[in-house]
Image (cartoon, rainbow, N blue to C red; front, top):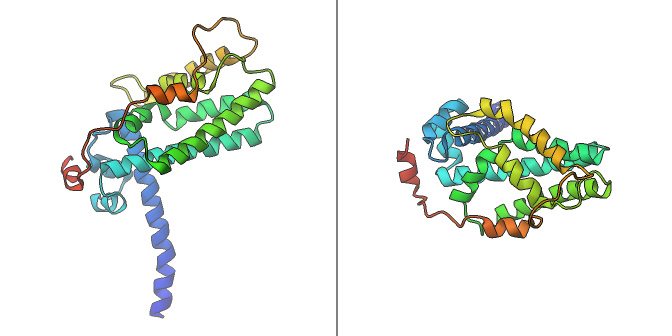
Length: 231
């Protein structure tokens, strides 16, 4: 009987741990966007509705939490891009769907976290980033081949304005982002449509251009004891 009782509890405990993990990731993403990467971890635990010990049981320090938040973001964007490509018969509608989902997932607000805290040579991050880029490239390729996407834009021409338009204004939070971002993203989409009504200055922005412009690794420490004291 005792063994049976333990077996019955384990699935529930695993489910609880999974829910707590998801809550922490969601709360961290929101607070990083609202307050920056230095927001006290205790506040993240409070918003997630978990105790501090639960947060530290999942994440030893701030850098580890940020890394998982970014991996989760990129994985979510990749999955959404794949679904849009599969489920939307209209190629441009697949692009529209991805663009607006990017705003919902707070990509603009979290990108500064990526550049400031993570090692650009991290193999897992690079694999996930390449998966995300390949998924978006597939959406753009299909829209271009259908004649709906103007031919003088590349993937960087799409990523840069998405990031800029989905970054909350200083001192504002999610509510302001939700109010303005989707409207402005529709203006972006109109500008991406073929036939184009303007001549773009300069050259198309490629992934190589974006990587060359990206910031280097942060010089911040990752001492777990120091992280636990930053509350």
